Length: 298
Image (cartoon, rainbow, N blue to C red; front, side, top):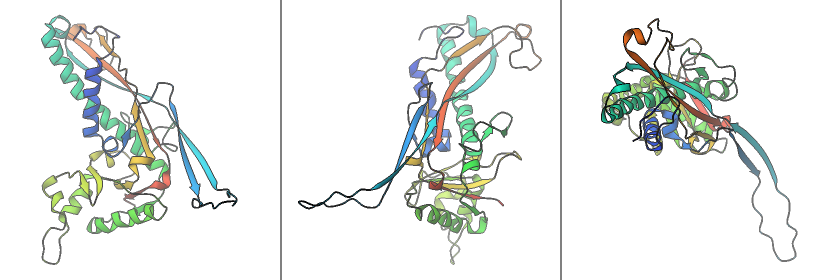
């Protein structure tokens, strides 16, 4: 691997590895499909066709159908993650530098995955946990999805069923289930009349990949410690078709050797440190809010 210098891009093999790890840590990335997103953004169209197809006999008129078309602009936003390391990185051997970059890439993947969920689920700027005016109301589950069910830990299975019924009743399929750790624990605690666990796959903090045919995931990003976020203990819906996300393939990396770029009060040179900074461009879109429902605390 060539030596990375300030302003260069991460190698494509490392970028692919980063985002495969994002899919392992981000609930939304796990439950939905990833689509390449150009820097300029893309327009995703949704066709709603009413009525049924027609069988036309010889000499019969082909009758009209009705269709409505909606669209969603998915434009990538810049996510930044930076970390200080010893300035040994600048002078060490190539093999050692690769180890630094692999460790940084691991941390970058986890932080970006968490930030992506916080932004898309709650409509918050991930670092400050404040509402993002540019997308909270128009492109987040908290801001858009108004089909909700009150959370009751003792009846979490019924809560999920009610949410699913609401989505299916509007003509959508439910192929994904996102759960908070509290909701996963509530499912594990449910017992039948013989005091046997109804959902043993959730016991002891386990995170099964599927629940009654739906892809599922448990993630602490559904409930974040912020007064600006709603406490979503479950989100159900058509993640495969009505939620899209993607990233621009270029991830620039910057090596900063001077000053205090992360505002910690520590001068880099004074402490023999450098700052590694990477930027990822990620876009997402909720194509139809009625394709989802949330189980949330009142």
